[in-house]
Amino acid sequence: MTRPAYRLLLDGTDITTRLQGRLIRLTLADNRGFETDQLDIELDDGDDGLALPRRGATVALHLGWAGQALEDKGTYIVDEIEHSGAPDRLTIHARSADLRTGITTKRQRSFHGHTVGDIVRSVAAANDLTPAIGAALASIALEHIDQTDESDANLLTRIALDLDAITTVKAGRLLFVKAGQATTASGKPLDTVTITRASGDNHRYHVADRAGYTAVRAHYHDKASATQKSVLVGNETIDEDEENPNEPTAANTKTLRHIYASAANATRAAKAEWQRIQRGVATFQLTLATGRTDLFPEIPVKVAGFKPEIDDADWLITRATHTLDDSGLITALEMEYKPEG
Image 1 (tube, rainbow, N blue to C red):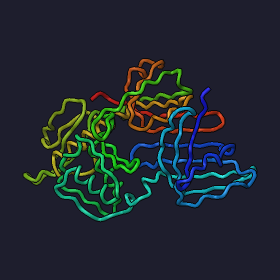
Image 2: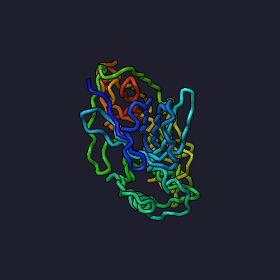
Image 3: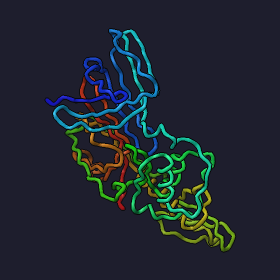
């Protein structure tokens, strides 16, 4: 039977051999967007033979199966250390090195008449990152946006929300790509992974009614008439309100709080929120008895062997948690429904 395997480097030095017989549990949570990835390592220190690593040390992880190429799962920075007993144990908590840079530092600046690509490239340059921008997003023009006492990470997240995009930093690359479209930043589709029930250990399927929303409204300032107007995006036929023709109507509408600078910006934001609502219709959690360290957020998934409603749906990974302990290597997936289009 194939055995799990790992390689750990502390500040560039391979410490895998030193940890043989000491590793109790290793857990890696790979998250979507700017939610920080976290690596937790629990070690047996019953013989008092382990030195405490310094905070700020780097830990690089490769994970997979013996006899196969191990997956490079990234580099992390130690920010918490715990020693407990008895029996004595050393627990190390480390977070993604990519998000411990200036991208989380608050800044003051404005962008006027820039495209999404311009802004992402500017942020990448300021943080010594390589930009990777989805082709469909790069040319979108933004009239004006202020960054007031706000980090670059938060700025990009805010822009991404209005475009239904995902932005994150992985392996020194600043990614800004369309959410749910299952493409790389260059536009190349990611291969869909098929998982059968025989591969699973346990699962949980949950479906909701989208909070009953049938449309999303976004308001904008119309410069020509110097009035506030709105746009509506959703499933229902949109009718004009006879008493207020600037307010199209729908049965159960979610209204965005922000007032946008133009109809185009408002429409993009409303469409983005509507697409998020659609994806939130159903969620699916699946634990794989045999870990798949090649899986990560945004990979599209099809499953087989469950209820027809589950098998017929297209799924998108939003979080992958890999756990290695005495029982083996497992992967817990959290997925959301991927609507058509």
